[in-house]
Structure formats: structure tokens, C-alpha cells
Length: 258
Image (cartoon, rainbow, N blue to C red; front, top):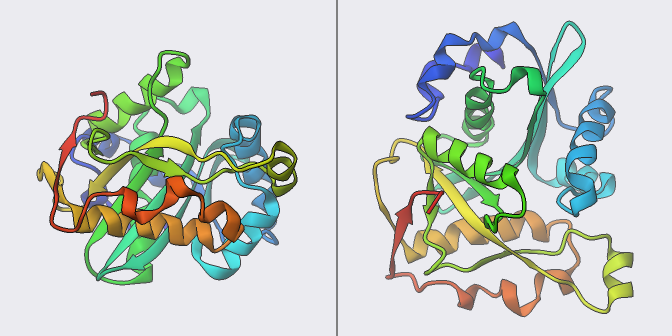
């Protein structure tokens, strides 16, 4: 896929990344838990995100590989881990929506421009799924000051040119990532509030989004989750589509740090 990583796919604020040749690294596209590289990539993601219940189990990912356009990208240099990211592409209303799940860059490769290529690389999968418009969507935690990494991530997306769907108008919730046995033992699922950070490829300068498009993006995310999560989790009242703006509403797109 390296030959498809051309500067034109980079976000407007990721010009620094043009100085870094993505072909420097070995890019492995993982599309099955049977891939020999899966365990290396998954172990890195689980070590970073598993303890916070922000990473799906192997069984969930196995089903996602089987039923959806899901992939993990593992980057290595001379056999040494450099970075990993995963994402899912899904057709929705005449465009391809890509859910940007997780990204992890080894400390020695941060601030090198590599993160910009990792943000843009999912466009390659989106183009494989279908031609036409593309929207990249990331779910980000609210910055409550408890974790400095949150502010860093939001600032990085802001510099790249991503925008945030105004949370004053859209209070989005992610389904409960805990294991079903843990959810059952606790008595109920607990969806978590997240912010939606978007890059509408080719439309990065637009500062509003129609309610219909917001609902379509959220519907795409819930369709991805619904393919593997239990119906009881997806039917939680906080995940109901009627909680979101009507089709003719106009929602502001604001800076992620706001």
C-alpha cells in the first residue's frame, strides 16, 4: 500500500509529514486474526488501551475482520515496532465513513511526521471500499484535565485540520466496551460520552454540518459496533438515534480544543 501513500491524502495541517517518506517503514496490512503479524499489533494496542476498556477483545475483532472492512496497520523498521493503528470503513449514504479506532506511535517516532501519515492512511482503505466522498471520524475523550495525553491528542488533530462536532448540540455516546461477563456482573452496560472529531476529505474548510449527516455518521459508527456487540448493549437509551439532531438541523463544527 505504500505507493498509495501520496502527499495529496494528507490533512491540510499535516504538511510536515511530506518530509518523511512513508516507504522508510514496513507497512503490514492485517485483515485477519490468523495473520502472523496480528499478535504483535494487537499486543501493542491492548497494552496501551485494554486496561481502560478502550480496546475490543480478540473475538470481537475476529468477527469485525470477517464481516466488515476492518484492518490493522503495523509499522516496523528493521523488525522493530514503530507504530500501529486500526480502523473500519463502511458505506453510508453515498460516501465511505471511516472509523478511526486507535493509534499508537513509539516514543522515538513521535513528532517526526509519522502521525500525519497514520491519520491519512485509512483513506487508502476507503478508496478500496468504494469511490466517492470520504469522511474520517474519531471518537475522543472529553478533556477533564485528568490525563495530559487527551489534550495532546486533541491538539494534534486540531493542528492537522480536523474539526469537532459541537458537543453542545451532539452528545454522543460510545457503547460499553467491557466484556459481556463484566457487564452482566455489574448489572447493566454503561455507555461512555465521547466527542466526534471529523475530517470530511476535500471539505475541510466547511464549518457546519447538517443534522442528517451527523445522524448518518453516528449511524455508521453504531452499525460497525452493532455487528459485534450484543443487542442489549446497542439498545441502551443513551444510544438511541432520536437523541441526536433532526435531519434539517445545522450543527457547528468547532476546534477540537474548544
